Image (cartoon, rainbow, N blue to C red; front, top):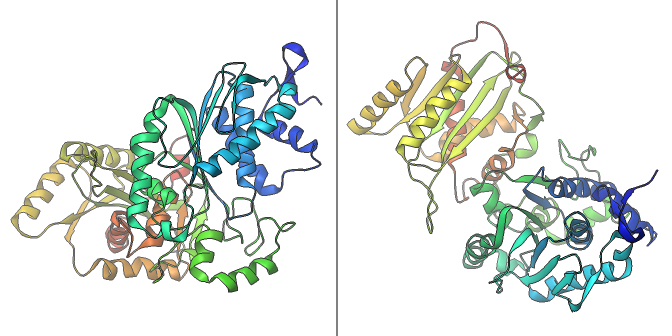
Length: 462
């Protein structure tokens, strides 16, 4: 079966990234491994326009840069011959190294796919193609003024533990990404971030916590529960390269903090975490439940330049017939009071009258007045309001205990990674709004009305 469509001059245009990568690698006597195929398919969705923000998290030595920074931009130019690509890495030298490999690939094999370098512009970090394509490589926080991009590739933006542990360095990287790099992206452009995790507040962690819309492919060195590749727990990511026994030796050498971050892609602080997330279960679709509550942690400040306000979070928790608690949905917004009230009402209507609504009540008359106002906004729905008591950690303990006992499941959805990242970092993370909402949901689920019949939320949208 042919892998490609014909083009002028006898060149061929690959139908998808998997076929393109296979054709290029076959000439080198190589074949993609299982985890690399998963990465290829995720990148294909970017090229096809199905995903505009992709984050790939893998341990060192997984060959992620070969696929993301060398093969993928070459394939991108076969699909978008006049496309413009900006590629960034932790230093200009690394970015230019990837650019040199890409340029060499195009020089050697590009003609077979209709790719020809412009003879007048062939620098490793800055070259053009005869079809009009432009490639520009830069180190993070390096100058990119005057450039535009249809595709931004960020590959390994963090270079050391010292940099990862520095709040100033993390802030500088995020500011550069937000204010300088993203300003170069054309309307409808796409962003791919490929990295090994270092810190819960590294660029990947911060983007998952602060932005929605990211598709995340997280592949740890040793499989955990609910592995994206279908591996058994403890199975190595690339056993042909490094088997589980070799990884165990590496783990003993580097220590738990380094191993959790660099190899398992779940960074944690030295003090660990309250939530035993390895005890969580996952489901692809919401199961049938006998009662539900949507618990809110309220804030009322919109995001703006130079500010990082708290989120308003609404977490929906369900109870199944066998007593399992299921996190069914999480909504988050950073907005002013009017938008927050509109979100509360719209979410309540989407959930239906069988879902109770749990609200925090601030101290004093102001808190009483706010709850009375929100009850009017939510007229017709069951509203449970109560004041906060005890520290955040104390309030979170019942939820943490249930997770530790294996009694909680989480629905896989676009919000799941940001939710887990916040639980993983608690109580030392930058934000805890989702933890607060989970704690309130656990405290009030028993007060929610029992459904007249079991409700299967996966069928509600049919």
